[in-house]
Image 1 (tube, helix red, strand yellow):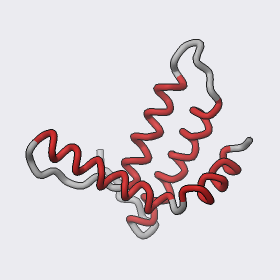
Image 2 (spheres, one colour):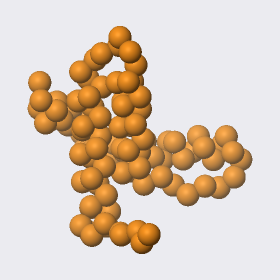
Image 3 (cartoon, one colour):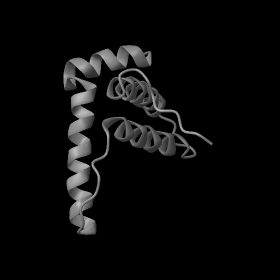
Length: 98
């Protein structure tokens, strides 16, 4: 199954990606604040997507543990990150100067 098909299937099951990743960001924020015992900035939802994609890539790198789900999910998380980032910045991602 293509990652776009999986994405549609998961959207039906879990709902809007931006809302879900915003909720994950809020939950992770609460855990990190509790752990570090200090106020921290909230994670933007696109950063959550990037972290989830990284998690899937680490899993995909495990020898003798091939699961196409890791690759499909990583692609979807990267798609979500790009879309959510553009929406957060009105379609004009901030450019970092070198």
